[in-house]
Length: 359
Image 1 (cartoon, rainbow, N blue to C red):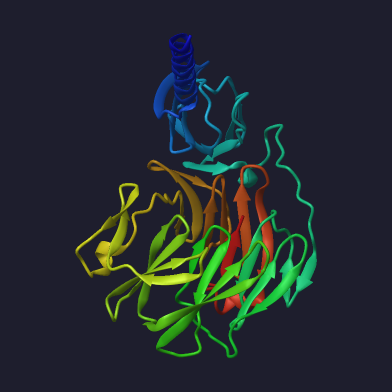
Image 2: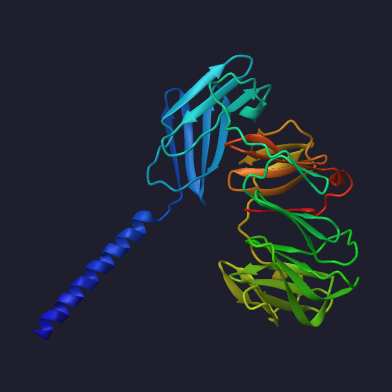
């Protein structure tokens, strides 16, 4: 009887293992490239690192799309394409899996539909303008984000529900050169001394709370944030050649000479050069400023997304980008088009490391 029960348990374990393996592989994401036609359009469809890329070719023009979307086991995702030609050419692909947006072409330039003459039956979703003011900042729309806007003594905190002044310095600090963003945290050294700091401020944008992390030894402002791994941020004192880890959970700082992050894991290295210690990143910047205009770059193809003169890209996130034009912060995404978010007259004079955006 015991032998029979043992065999039954073994059989159940084997079946369960097979089932779990099946579930794993059936839901696993695979990179791929597929070529196909929809009517007169030639399409190259590919998937990699959570992004779908489509190159649609017609009449010697190529319309590139880059869309972050949930992975689908289905291939050949474009089912139909609307095409209209007037003083410009605009196309709008259709898919039951992915939400597409129109692209247009004129004078040898591809651009998004917010810059078009609206020749298609398509509209971006409307926003609800806030029309609020806080500390001389005009708030038009926040897109559900949390913002930390540097004000020389700390930060103005903005979200859809409330605004708050987070003060961390007793005197004005005009150049915030050293900081690090991770998840919902911003970490900033204490700027009370001009040459060294002996504590760090950890700002939690989820609850507006600020924690102080004390340091046993002072660290030179000639230091570099190397990167992060799990719940730790890594920092290198260039002057003293010492590497530290900052544990965001335990609020603890330790010397860790020397580690870096490469090929998906932390590695010990026999080097005290900061170039060898900076963590490997998977970040890819898809947006570029060319001649003061902002473009989405897909392979070697450019899609213009704004007619504004853009001075700086603040943040890229999934299918949207945040950027400065003069004293105004804008967002572009595929749902709303180009949207004015904030206006701050101070940004005419200084916008270096002044704006931090958290989802």
